[in-house]
Structure formats: C-alpha cells, structure tokens
Length: 299
Image 1: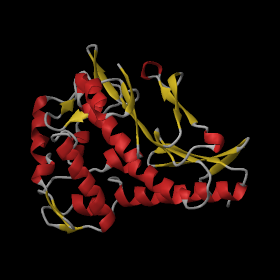
Image 2: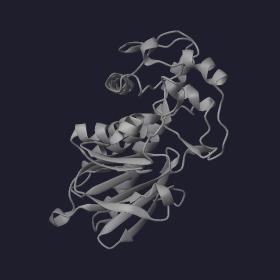
Image 3: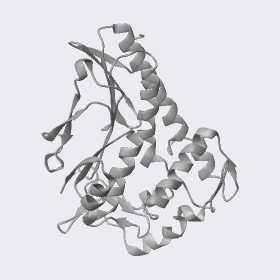
C-alpha cells in the first residue's frame, strides 16, 4: 500500500486492525486472520465502500444526488435504484415512527447547534422552518422524488449504518475471516470468531464519555448501534437538550435516555430501533421491550 494511503494497519496477535477516517468519524476494521494480504484487501475494500457512499449521499457535497434533490426547487428528480431503496426505507421509518423519523427535518440543523453551549433558538425561528418539514409533503413515486421548494432531505440518520452493512457484505466475499466493522460506533460483525468466540465491544458511559465503559457486550454476529447525547447536546439553566429532535415540534425530545444501545440483524435495523427509542423519550424502555431485541438503556 502506498505511503499516501489514509489506511493504517496494525497487527494484534491473531487479529489485524485497519483504521481510517470517513463520514466525519473514526473507522475501524478488525479482521481475524494471520494473512497480511487479506487484512489489507479487506480494509481497503471497506474504506472504498465508505468513501463511495459518503461521496454519493453526503449532504455536504455538491453535485451528488442529495445536492440535486435539495436544489431542484420543486421539480421532480429521477433517482437511481440504490437511492430509491434508501428512500423506501426512509418512508418505512417515517410510517413506523408515526412521523417522528423524518429525513426532511435536517433543516432544523440551521437553528440547533449541539456544541455544549446554552444557545437555544426561539420559537419564532423554529416556526419559520416548520413548513419545510414533513415527508408527507414530498411526492415519492419511484424513481421520481419531488420536494416543495425550500425543502431538503438528509440521509445522515441512516447513511452510516447502511455503509457498515454494505461494506460488511463486500468484506465477507473476500475471505472466510470474521470481520468487525465499526464506523463511529455503528458496528456489524459478519460471523463468529474461531471456536465460536464473540467480539467484545465496550459501551461508552455517557456520564463519563470517552474515559470508561458502562459495560462490555459479546457480539457473535449482527449489527450494534448506540444513540445518545454524550457529545452532542445543549445545556441551559440546568436543562440538558439532546440532539435528537422531534420533527413535529422542532424541539429536542424531552426525557430521552442518555444513551440507547441495540443489537439487531443488521446495523441499519439496529440504528433504526435505537433512534426510535430515543424519539420515544420517557417511554424508550417500554418501546424497546416490545421489539424483542437485546438493548441497553442508560438514563
């Protein structure tokens, strides 16, 4: 691999760890193998897929499909099959959450800056952008999407989890190795380690984030995600405002847990459930119990 590569690869006994930065977060690929070539090829494949999906779906890049949709000014935009699949999933999330998971709510980020400060927007500002929010205001007849002029979509709520799942599928085609992919805490394990051993994953303690774990999870196979406000929040007059926003009010969800961790069949499914739980606020645990999945909820 050329010295200019963004990938770092290190050996840890019978496991190789590849690391790089993508999607504005640190990314890791753990491969149970003694073969350096497999480790390199797996990490490079995962990195290329992360980069592809970031370039295609990031709201911060010009000229991609999201940029075209967000600057169509009321005109229909024809999308490719992969984008259509994500829009279908977003529609399903909108319906299952009764409108609380909404990919058009990204316009609220112009008002809410979750930087740990006490800067809270006023109701007049929020009221001004609310007419631009609502997936039910969009017209989605695959492969054509039409937004009202001024509306935007943001796939940030599902993009990273989707990238983890897609990268894992590609990695599994390269070898029989057990591979753990971690994009900023969104994780997928493709198969158990040798002798049916699990991977051990630390759960961050939101009350002392980055310094100690709230516990360790054994993961044989599947997706794991954590939603929470450890690093993104506002604090004013003793009230902590989570970065999880209710698109129906324009305000952070009250009484939301500090963090929710969920294990599911895919990273995308785990991310959906952990976010849904946060959106349920004080009823998060009740919602999770009804889903029949493994979860950890920290208040």
